[in-house]
Length: 251
Ligand SMILES: [Zn+2]
Image (cartoon, rainbow, N blue to C red; front, side, top):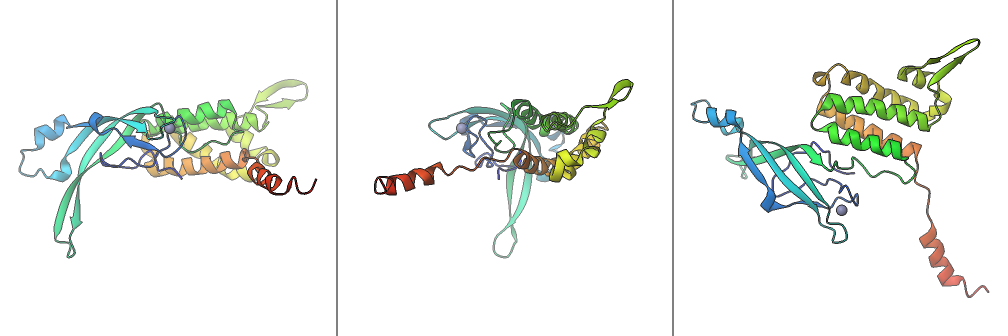
């Protein structure tokens, strides 16, 4: 499983994020592009008597590069940093300071997880939209999850309208589409409903949505996508090996 896009890192250790081009966990920080500076507020406060290294806040930018020679994709990243105190030594009496950084924006957006081959393009595009908003705008990411659900339901042939005898068809809400179609959604109904709830919270602003909620939503989304679009089993390697070993002998 790929690391969360929220994972904090040092400038010498890139999390196991997936390359946007080859979808492998092969991104490295290009060290010479890494640049960080303290914020204006830290500069103003750092000479105060109460100021501690824990109060240091920074901004940073850098490039990531895929280490696979056949790929070499490049990603631009920016975000914020802080200094954290770590207790070290056998007796825990020593302490060390370390600069930790958290990404807020990636371009191009990073894959949240590998997508199955059968996942349709509108769903792929919307998952990428969720990824691009996840770390910089939680409420917008939650809203994008809501739009993603509508596209997923379309692809699962869940109707958008309720036909009524002698009357004009009525548009169904997302909640109604989920609740009224348990036979079409099967084991995915609960997960889809959970994602709908975080989507609703998105319309109430960022404060209701924590990093943990979004990470949970990404795990549920990965599970759903893999259940709805299962990877077809492929035994071609084994078939080829058996044919090579025994094919001629049996003729
Ligand atoms: Zn790559």
